[in-house]
Image (cartoon, rainbow, N blue to C red):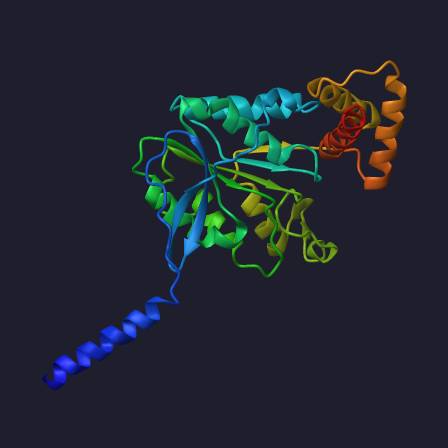
Length: 290
């Protein structure tokens, strides 16, 4: 055996040993016919994986946000009809229905070919790669970026900023971005940002820090604001979920008082808190009756 053959044999043996420590990369999805998917990074690339057990929430399940539902629903219908449509930013306090609204759109329109692809914040740097992979498909894609927020020195927000409206290339017509955030401008707003602002001949000139923070959120064509629910709205959401769970009682006042106590203990009168209360209340009563 020559020295070359011996070397190759040793290299093959070494590679076989290395393969034992390299995890297999699962196969990704390449065909899309409507449904929920998640982008998963692998090294310098990534794959699309199907989310097989997506939430079943519907638009009718979301109470007390009629204006927001109608606006994003119409925008989504325009998109699916190959008409002009906008990227959407949903912002406001936690538990007010932002993420649930986007998930409900999937259940409303997946049979019409809507594909919702979840992209986590850590993978925003892959947005260009994701769009390139999807741009030549004949399907409609909404890239879903949940709970976006960036610190002042976080460079990752520039990736989504460029994709939205900062590149020489135009975004494909079959892709939109729907993002949620607790912050209106996605970046923290500091009192110190206003110090450098100037009043020139009666006109307010914002400093560069404020302009930078506004420049990202303004790239979304539609802004939808969500606000905390008042007590009446919170109780209306509780009543809805009680009916949805087919719970009947002769003394609804007891249930409502318990739901208000639940909201107080959990620190918010939110749609999420109302749903969690009814799950707990109805579940306990059904268990007792078994």
